[in-house]
Image (cartoon, one colour):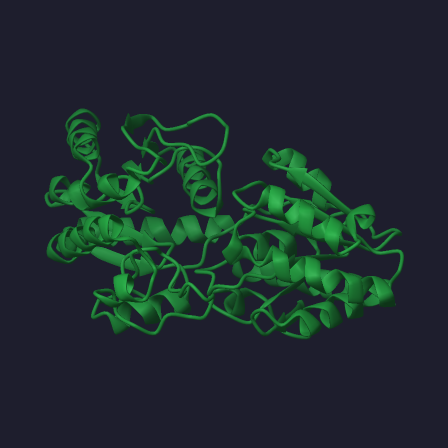
Length: 392
């Protein structure tokens, strides 16, 4: 089978890119011809691994590309004519590639695996400027509520209009989690049952050793909640003085967060590791007693949670969005309210205070990851969706 994968970005920058590249590899290992089309925009330094490319940008002109990317439409037409895919699988496309790619997809069976809230929120976060969840439908409120400037509101309003007009190009729409599925259904979009991303089965981490380590891995941006984590650490250190914090990742808030750690007096117990390759990240996180996902927004899924669970690491995460689909409170880790510094610190201290607790939760998480989030099972599910579209 020939499968054309489409994603806004072609590097290993975040979860969506990791999942798309992993799916391409898994399909190829099964004998299918899978190719990726992405923009040449880059979120972070790193190689663009796409087979087909179009123009993209992360400059102030990005809203224009979000509205209508002529280069993307041409690239999709060219890829379809050259590759002649049996099916097209779209992951993210509303940050760079735009609804312009939908018209060329009308004559090819196409599935959209929705990994963000972008189809119903111009910013993709469903979060208001004050950090609270957004309960409004996209429209004038996006400007009057302070989420966007006039130029970006106009451009992204055009995007929403074109998306609604042309979304019929997709034969199947599959949300990544129940949280995303609920947001889509509320907007009147018919979806299949959620299909969570899969992670590759790997060897468990080594047995835990001292000192107790908390690890965070992700983009250093406001919505990821690293501020809350840093503010929680003094209370954690008061209960577990030997604890250490590892922060892996890069992003727009990196410098500010380093300064915050210094002001809180925890810089000697905190290491900022920067952006790491997949192998480097795996090595860096292996000593962790607990991995923390302190997101301030309703994560569409939160891939780092099942990745940590597959490693055999306990997870403390906010009880919001797709994180509720993976972490079992009190068994594979703990779920805490969004932005609750005291609750986060208390949950981390509970795990770090007992190696036995950390090991037991990590083992339970690994069993759940193997049973529920194996990459091979997800590939099987998508192959079944492809076959169903072709049969129809």
